[in-house]
Image 1 (tube, rainbow, N blue to C red):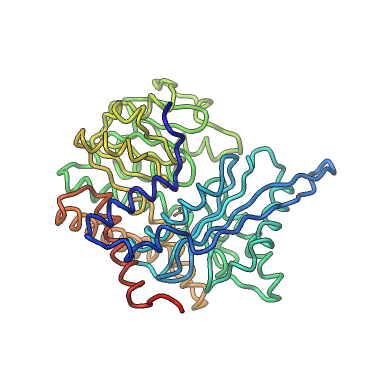
Image 2 (tube, rainbow, N blue to C red; image 1 turned 60 degrees about the horizontal axis):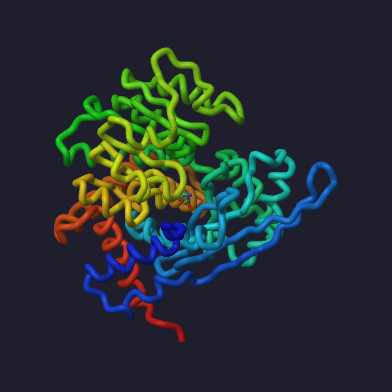
Amino acid sequence: MAKAYNPYENMLSVLESAANMLGLAEEDYVTLKYPERELKVSLPIRMDDGSVKVFEGYRVQHSSLRGPCKGGVRFHQNSDMDEVKALAAWMSFKCAVANIPYGGGKGGIKVDPSTLSKNELERLTRRFTAMILPLIGPEKDIPAPDVNTNAEIMGWMMDTYSMFQGYPVSGVVTGKPIEIGGSLGRGEATGRGVMFIADEILKKKGMKPQDCRVAVLGMGNVGGVAARLMHKAGYKIVAVGDVSGGLIDYNGIDMDALSAYLAEKRGNVVKDFKTATGKFVTNEDVIACDCDLLVPAALENQINASNAANVKASIIVEGANGPTTVEADAILDAAGKTIVPDILANAGGVVVSYFEWVQNIQSISWTEADVNEALRKKMVLAFDEVWTKAQEYKTSMRMGAYMTAIGRLVAAKKIRGIFP
Ligand code: GLU
């Protein structure tokens, strides 16, 4: 039987390969194999029916070498310490690739939020914030949205932290509502960044958006936004998928209509969307559909040893964190596919989180046009650096991205030294 997928081992394996390719000694990068801090908390919540349920939560700080730890909080029934540890490490690498002055962290609660009422969700969020309070703060560790969390939840976190401090602290979380210090453009930033990266890889391949058929797996804040913006920019979206299954329409999916339908009310899913020529399929069919560009933008482990050989797209842009296993990566590489890795492709969210934090610290606000243009510049620069590194070492973009990140982290470690 195949070994159970462990995202942390996946991360370690890629880290090791990139460090070897850079010719680093184990001592140079050994600290990156271990998170700096791991906190596990129990969260007793009074449910609406009067009963008490205890949930488990996590906050992991992987590295503060280049700045405060930074990374989202996800609410998911399968979340566990190994997942959060991997996600925290990926944040350190992502912030280093994007060259923003942050380390990496991540948080999670093991819960299916669709089973909670809004009041229960708020109590859970506030209790979690109180329990991780000693770790977080604008100079220490700054949470943000991730899978199943959003601006409203960030607002509750900001309020809870501020109540303990006795004054408003907007910079403790990013991805907040605009009214309390959120940034214009943050909501769409990850999806927009995915599109900027798709634009760049297309240029390298001599392709135009109009000639590019796209499949997107995941219709949340990353995949949903990326598909809508790409549709608007002229890409042809031929397949999408979410938790309910997939939809394929080689005539092109009207993403404006689908996005409006999904946003209409909580619980709306792809399979209930009315379409004239589309066919409802499984997520595996979306992965295997006839397209040029595949954007996995849901959870980890979507493209694995069992389905990698089915991928027809020649380009994969990773909107999710860790969507491709090490085994799948090797299969896709051998088949000559170009993969733009997660730590580059989905960095748009944390880049605009950084802009939000800068605006909070300076008590100013930028226009949406300024945010989007600054994001584009950061993404294009990071893409070019990774592309150049991959060319220089004649390797994949994943290795190019990891080498760029590890190079920066190891340089910071050398300068800072080991305490005491
Ligand atoms: N959760 C997002 C990510 O995985 C954003 C993190 C942030 O903005 O801090 O990159």
